[in-house]
Image (cartoon, rainbow, N blue to C red; front, top):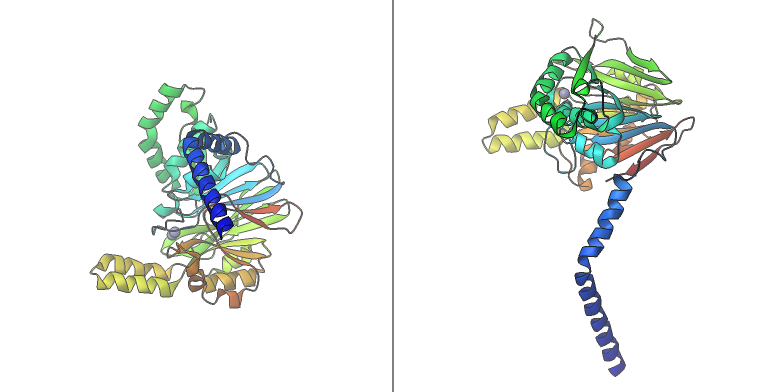
Length: 362
Ligand SMILES: [Zn+2]
Ligand SMILES: [Zn+2]
């Protein structure tokens, strides 16, 4: 008994001594941790050790609804060393930076459609690409006709700020000739179900736009990206789309948007009962131009996709506990891997293999 009391006493004294030491050394300890994080993030090229292949950065898996875990729609893609961005919703630019995506090397941004939640982070990305990449020409931005007006608006809004940047950092860092964006409209074929449009095909990278169904928003595009014998398909915003299924045939990963109707119906009813009629109407209206998780699973099954990853997730899913509720019967329809996408997730598809590596980069 006495020995136990002595042992407990010694442990208590040691604990107090350790606590006191940690308190006294808290500043140098914090400094050490900070420097090590800086060295591991800013201090190195975080793409240098990636295998040759396709790397998909989920920088925004949410929707316009506030989700503490998810930015607006945003997907960064590295095809070998070439960097592309597909939509840039609010908060996406910051997530890309945290993930070590080489924004300064961005070659082009592709917009799926002109709903503002798909481009409201464009200002931030234009600024980061311009200065981060010491650009000498504006960043190209492709999208449906009307993208010219969107890009011109961002250029106008950031014009004054760009002058400050050049004056402060000098033209070598913030070259006025590289400021802003330049738009390339993608002309949609006439008719309801468009043919696929090859928007890039060089150096082994092929990107195809396909007209999906997000009516009344016309046109709206999904994209297929191919490199090194691997492919990913992004649905953009759409209901179940046979054209997308056709273009997604045999793809390694189908990234599909989805809205869980039962959950959104509950939200619409709650909004109505608290007197928020407009919100209730919006929550009701949005149900008719998005796919359900089961629709997306059907698309993945029919396309023979290797995996189904959800993005543009409605409603917000702040905790994984809600995932089964969101997914509904999707797992009964598609028997391949189903992943509820999260911001910070990187999917890697090494060239010439059938591997799919998934990791979180916070
Ligand atoms: Zn959307
Ligand atoms: Zn939309």
